[in-house]
Image 1 (cartoon, one colour):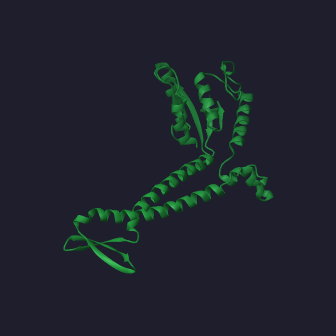
Image 2: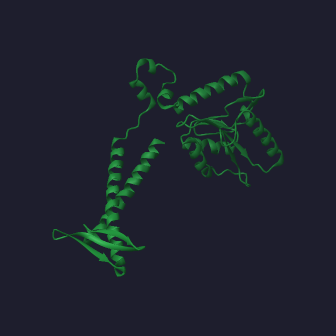
Image 3: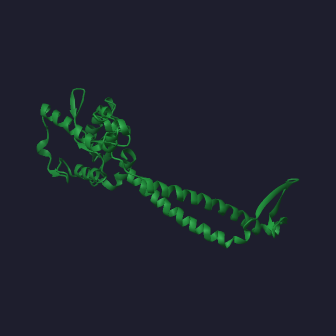
Length: 277
């Protein structure tokens, strides 16, 4: 996320430099208006424009009638360009300083700079940043999942036929596509993290983490929602989720398949970025 911010600054810096070049060219073209200003006065409801400036060390003031409208515009434009160039140069200076002084600080590096009492805290990263590191969060959730499996068993272990690039076995091609998308976006996640609702076990497809805010979300793939039996089953499941305050767009993200039974993972990128980046 931070890296993307610097990328955006670098793009804006290029745009500001290009704008600065264009403004300078236009200013050079209008150099005859250097040192001149436009003054407007109102008399009896009418506006009167005057060009003021300095010529040969002497101040002058010249009335510009309606036939001098173009000159009025060019004098105004020159003043605007002067202001725009100053603002542009200030923006460029600020962006260059930001990029030059930017440094990525890992949570563990910052923790080491703290006193011993802080470093020894298990949640030192969260103390510094307000969130846990993604890696530690995944490890914690995987350990919790394993303890749950050891106690209650893994009810559909044999049904997982698809293997993701990180070695995780999943049950469907859509889940595999979602898994690979989460890996590619570097979103911390755990597959089928178990939860208990009214003495019943549920395993949402993924639990995911926004490392910037510390917010956890369940990510559930509904699949092909047209089939009546399948739809009824999932509506009941959503009702159970909501009863446990797992609510769509609050802490539950839903994905669906198209009429061909396929999932367009790239179309999900904006949603994932909005909630998890």
